[in-house]
Image 1: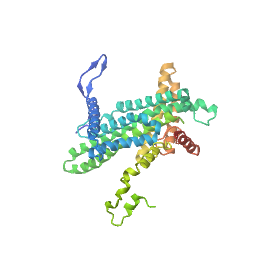
Image 2: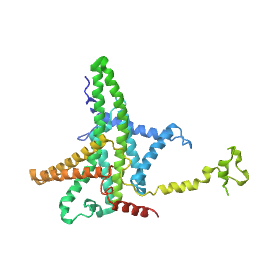
Image 3: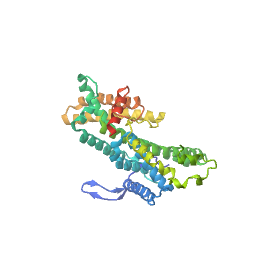
Length: 240
Length: 144
């Protein structure tokens, strides 16, 4: 019977030893390249004709653009405009990685915690840097809730700092856990089909349903990651 | 006086040649383009809605979010304690202290994410009136 976790195995495609580091080109890297290429293709080819009345493909490209633009406008505000390219890239990359991962035999990049955590860390460090540059030392007042008596500070400031540091952890973990759980579940049900023979129709039906759910989860998690990035950015720019 | 555009819309036979040619009419879509543009530009300066109000929060998703917040706060706390212990050589003690601080942080995060029922963090989504005041102020700041 197929092992449900086999799909997450990293296989080296091209061996590249870089000093003492293992910088090999793996199936994970290959699928990252594929999703970047797919996004680029989707947007550039879709927008090639730039028709006033968009066709189907151009409509999809424009819809995804507008969707993220509205997200940024509503959750970050006007100042968020200059960060839109980054947020849009993030959204499209996660969305396409999730969706490509749903194709049979494909590898899901976002089901590896190191990938999602790296994405979350980039967001976290970037947002913290923006806040530091924009507010300088006033940034640290973020860790002292307003209207709290001073004698509570020794207790509350560490808690606030830990709660701030937990942001990238939750951000990365949420995407990873959702993708990994869904794919494992699909594989477990797929294993039942072979074992049950004729009775395998039941797990096939379950897989069809689960697959639909997974498509929703793939889009939803890309959206959640993006909206959380927007909210963190809003915090960094406005500093309550 | 009825505007020309209006007259077209109310023409009984609804034919397009009801447009009076001598007045140099534009099609209506270009006529009010300016107004529509102004409206769209106004939209670019909304009162900053910080709360993640549109986030679909199903029961399962919310439960998962709460669990995740709780655990990650705790994990970060314990991790910091462990690293500080490693560094200062005070083996168990700082980890014990930061275990409780991390638990506190986790609960705080849960409280925050649940109390405004969105993904909002920080104090932006805090309940009570001063939040709307802040939004008003920001709106005024954005105006010019």
